[in-house]
Image (cartoon, rainbow, N blue to C red; front, side, top):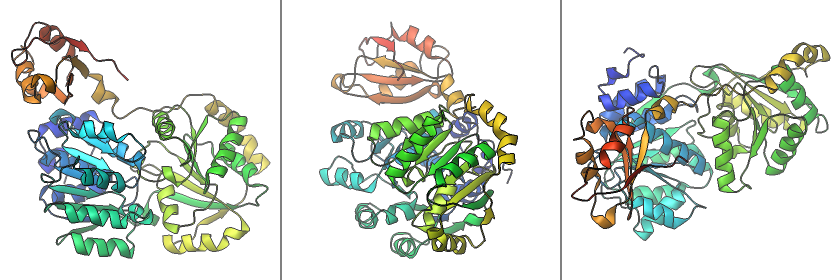
Length: 478
């Protein structure tokens, strides 16, 4: 197959156009293997490292197979964390933008009422954490009767976080569905789960963690010298973008405060922070607002951030699998990366377990010397003072989109098809120029694509929708 051309999969133009706008150059190995199987409707088990492009591997076929006319959810995607749920929702909606695919994210520590209101609208895909998904099922606010596709994303992490029983409860209540399971590792619990709930699945293994384009190394440190060595490593390595992983939120606070005192562009994220603050930090990191992120394992899974050149394990993780997930933040999509660990004497056994799991020795390196630091100091200071060159992959896609606001919704008996039928009759506008439509009780939002927003806005000021003249404005951007 020509990996530079997604049309080789037989995808519709609405999907391939979106992929082109998103900057997808060609299928990764996991996408090339999974997409044909998924499009055939078969169950699939995929072992593939983080950063291999697996979200698009299931997001592309899902968006291709979903029916826009159906109002109830047709696909359910389970994720271990709130951050990943939001990321997957965004990715699915971007891939399905020109098909008007709507995804809804549901997770804990967010008002239930707002999620219920969103679920009452047309939602083709629901992405959520197991606990909150079960809550919605129990309260009858998430209907499952039209679900035909189920994705278990980061399945090993869901199980390690104690979600096994909840995942089983959800799967037990689903109608017959295509099931796709994605995991970076395959512990016994995953195998047992797949044997029970998947039907003759196609097994796909793309690569082992050791084969990724990531260089692994460690430096011996003492508790007293650890932070000083971290500082030396950042100067000597001069990363473009770097994540520093710690085991505890106390260490995250300590390291982040220490780097900030040295004028590093740094932020932190851990489970003790408010959810909105965590979301804001990750959004800013993806946008390139700062170079260094200090985090607990809450940020180790599924966060798609381009250009992470270095991962520093300030503390080795307790679970050897977590080392793989942390280091998988770098070396993504064919890029090279370095995962370097700061290892205290008490970590010797844990390091050996990680090496056994990787199936390779991790290179021991000396602490950077004064000569090393002198050679890189000027370049380090220059880079520290410049902005991150981060380009949102959605920038091109969003450039030609205008969101319009109409002062009428469900209370006026308006439906999405009413807006599509009306807007598509405007001269020079077709249904393919209409994006996602969100209808609430008293108002409606309609995305207009391909730079035709101003034309539609002008025409709709004097055009009725289902016999009703609505006020229309450009919606304020958040």
